[in-house]
Length: 520
Ligand code: MSP
Image (cartoon, rainbow, N blue to C red):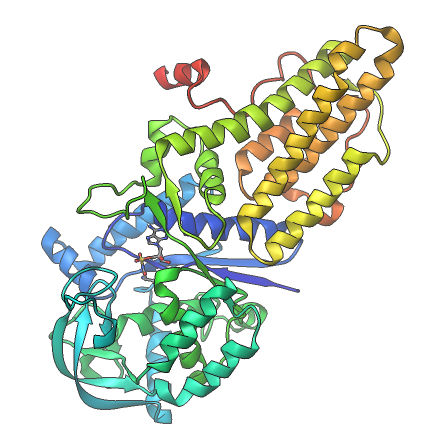
């Protein structure tokens, strides 16, 4: 692998970011950070989807222009990602000129090729999905199954994309390309949807939607919002604008998306790329949905939670606990849940009690018994083997994007180191001068394991990882360490800690000190 290009879905700007949007961006960032640790050039694209009727209406309700409204909300997304330490390479907005040019180019190319044609059409349109629904997809009451709203009957003369022309090629591609749709169990769902596909409407009349990219040479029509949105993945990688970037990074290695928009990504998007003769992305990775206290987040239920609300409520110094919780709450791909109770319990158990305490007590012992000096370097032992094999497991789990299992493997290494410390009981060994060398060895093993943990956990909790790194006086920054350089024996002899440098890297969410910080 000589490059890694990963994208997220681009969020509609009709509402500010919530923890469902955050879940996806965090997962993408975790993968991007891990691949950077492999020394591979990574390009990470995220952004906002700013056209369409929903946004037009919301802006009108607020009495501002759609562009002003988009600018306002796009900034809220950027701020949220900053707060959560999400480091993308480009934040694309579909209202940007380079993107509008790409979308018009695609449309024109496909008209010229005969893959887009004009016809009149009557269909049922769901504004929530921004899509025409097949009557077979509706609930018994005739509602959209996702939004539980009645779709609107629309009769218009539109442009159509010859999706049916690519149906067989696409079916073969899905069947014969392992890893194209992940998790694999979702591929069948797509193959079923593919059976029913018809040509799709790819424009709307300007009277029905004015906020969008005009069809080239036909001012009366606006390009359908999904064609506009999906194309962001090539604009973002430089298509038509930066050949060098595009040659380096396309095709995308991963399109990270929610399970609700799989059809658009696994059917419409590859068919469009086939029509454009552009190579297909390697993997479409569909994640599950986050519920709140087991209910779907919705404005009407009033249970929409912004990432910042959680950060403020617990007075968190950074987004690490939320990143960690969301990545470990459910096997990746399945639906997960947020509740305050589960959040507190999980981060207290893993980050404070398990990880934080182990570092704290081993460094404290190092200060007490050896004035903070590493006095010995141990060779290969069972614990060294465990650290090395955890690194391998983490790499393998990331190969298949099993993020939750990767995180679990890391925490289980911390568990082992905790158990090892308790079994060896260095505090008891330290009572006898004769066994002091053994104390030094035990502390070396535990602290060298913590160095491994800090590198491995960095994609999930970058701030905590750096804090561990600094407390152990390790050189440089944790994010500069490549996985290929992470080998047992990196911790060297010498003074690494003193009484005033040893402090908790993560405070329990209900601890007194955390309360103190809150009062300040
Ligand atoms: N604009 C389209 C995507 C276009 S991609 C070319 C869209 N926007 S969205 O704002 O509705 O959703 C953006 C992403 O957030 C989607 O991948 C969606 O699945 C995800 N999520 C929205 N709510 C979510 C949860 N409650 N939980 C997890 N992800 C969720 O669809």
